[in-house]
Structures are given as structure tokens and as C-alpha cells.
Image (cartoon, rainbow, N blue to C red; front, side):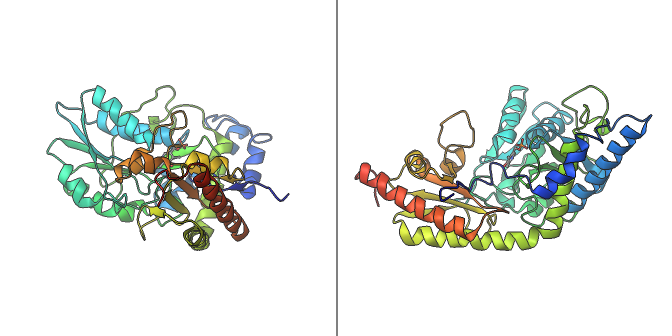
Length: 391
Ligand SMILES: *Cc1c(COP(=O)(O)O)cnc(C)c1O
């Protein structure tokens, strides 16, 4: 098994932790009840499991369990937050502030709001990918009803000062939403301590299952009102109807429990591996530069631009290393990353960028092998395309 592929794409998704899988298993088979069935023990059993998972997710982010609304993932949570909060505050000229480097699951609902008559400001980040509270404050107008700025960027890993942004919003009575998918379980996230109003979460970036997520909806100081996006049954306090994915939610709860117990130690270990990977690459690849923030960065993120080495060519010469190029995030399209362009990278540089995502099951041996494979691939690509933007 010399050529076992190395998974370094933890920002895209993560393997399900075997402990999570074991927790989920009985809820597919013997405990298959509908959590909304009130008249028999199958339903009660399922409801009890959902309640325990809701408590686990709430505990991880410092929320009250009744503030957690389960969804089909963070894409849905972002749609519910952005569309739901804006539409509940619809008025002539109503205005929304977001950042230019949000995930498409925030940017596309913002475009939808523009089609509905809202105006939206897309705040440019600084060269490290950071959106400051001052930049947000500068974009706010008397008509602003919602601000949405991510906690951690999924491409370059930059961490935003969401507590400061929340304060700017609170002073002006504006609802603040953050997409915290990448931050969850990696950095401390205390929704009440930080003063957040709406927070999107996803299980599958946390070694939980795909297809389940949650929206934190602040219930007090103030209670945040949302227009539902879906209709049909009144589940989840009327905010998200539909039969609950009980096994998925149980898995999300188990993943949250593990992150609560082990997240801090894991983040330190992963950050060390990330630093090792960067040192190895820096030592063997000339013309390599790091993207993102030098210190305010997710522990498992390393995003690099390698002069004269198109990422697609590098990746096809390093087939055992699973990483993403600077254009992979919107799966269907091959457009260069809107994030790297917003950070000031040229189109050519964005296309010569690779995102490494390290996580729970990444080992030192994998990091060393990946650095070697990528280094050799870069040499090969440069030999085949001599002179093309070389350092
Ligand atoms: C993965 C991701 C999403 C989408 O989450 P899903 O649960 O896959 O819908 C949203 N925002 C960010 C920052 C992400 O990394």
C-alpha cells in the first residue's frame, strides 16, 4: 500500500469519525422512529436522541438548545439566515452588508435579495483576507437590516473578528449572521459571549455526516425573527419543516461531543502538522508564497501560490495527494477563485494556487510524503512549461 492516497482536503469535507458512525448506526435500523411521532415509543426514542444531539451542538457553541434549528446543512442554514432575516425586515431601500469572499451559500442568497429589491454591499477584505469591524461599520447605512460575515474563510483560512463585528451591529440594532462552518470545533466559538445573532453550522466539516447542519437563532436579547424559507409541518419551531434526519442529527451530536472534548488538543496537533508542511514546501519549492493571514488562520489551512506552476498540472502530477486548486470550490465551474482574486492575486496566480486542508486523521508521514510529491510535481510541471511566470 505504498501509494495510499493522502487526503488533504478537509475544508471540502471530512471522513466520518468511526465513533460518530457507531453512534448513528442504530438510528437507521432498530431506532428508526419519526421524531415527530408523539403516540408511541419509536417516536419518543427518536425524539430523545434528537434532544440529546441538540444539547451537544448547543454546548459546543455556548447556545441554549432551543436556539438550535437543524437543517440539511450549512447551505440551507445560510439561506434561512440571509433570506429569512432580510425578508422579515423588508422595507423600501433595505440594505444588507456582506463580505466579497463569503462562501457561495451566502453570496448567492445575497444576489437573490438584490433581485427582490434589496441593495447589498460586498465589503472587500484586506490583503490577508480579513474583514475588519471598521470596514463593516463603513459599509453600514441607516437602511442596513442585516450583516453577514463568515467566521473563518474556507479557502485561505483567515479568521474574522466576529465579536467586534457583532458589537458594531448590536450598537446599531442590526442583525448579525456568521457562517461558522470552518471555525466549528477548530477555534473557540461562544455565540453568546461573542454576541452573535445567527450562526450557520455543518456536521460534515467536523468529522460528522454530510447532509446535516444547523442554524443558531438567538432567542433573547434580542429574539431574532426570521421568515421561513420552507413551509410544511411546523417542525423546528416553524423555521424548518420536514421530517428530521434522526441518524444524521445523532451523528452531528456525536461529532459535537468529540469536538467539545478533543477540539483544542486536536487543533494544536493539526497546526503543528500544517506548519511542518509549510516548512517542507518552503524548503523545496522556490517561488512559493502563502495566502491568507500569517497568524489569524485556521489550524488546518495552508493555501499557497506557486509561481509558474498551474495547480491543475501540479495536481495531475501528484495524483496520490488530494488537495484543491484555486478554482475548485464551486465544483461545476473552472473560474478562478473569487477569494484569491479579492486578495489581489491575478487570474494566473489564482490558477497556480493550491489549498491544503489538514485534519483529525492527518499524520506526519502523510504530510512529509505530500510535500515530497508536490515538490516533484512542481519541478516536472516547470520543466514541461519552461519560462511561464517562473520566479
Ligand atoms: C462547506 C461550507 C458550506 C456549505 O455547507 P454544506 O453543509 O455542505 O451545505 C458553507 N460555508 C462554508 C464556509 C463551508 O466551508
